[in-house]
Length: 135
Image (tube, rainbow, N blue to C red; front, side):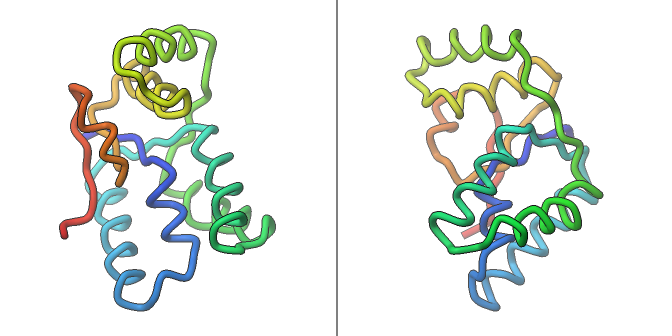
């Protein structure tokens, strides 16, 4: 399956989440990238850098190293284009999505992806498959 990995998974992998949760997250990520075509977009990387520092105190250099060492070898990073903006605009108006969420969905739609990996339940109101850790 071709899927987009949203910010939440990367933030949790990048932050100190405790041994048990960290192990579950690592296994989940490993299986995702092994069994699927994994993509993300440049907005996710921006959010990852910002949220990791603001919420978890992870330095910019540490997060950039995480991107270089963990994400880039396994996940293709897609650009966000003007066409994605046009799609996102329609999604915002139709589903009342946050602009960043709409851009993620636009990336999925405009690149033929099939699912999003995210803990964000706002995506459940859309006709798209959402994957997340089993509770």
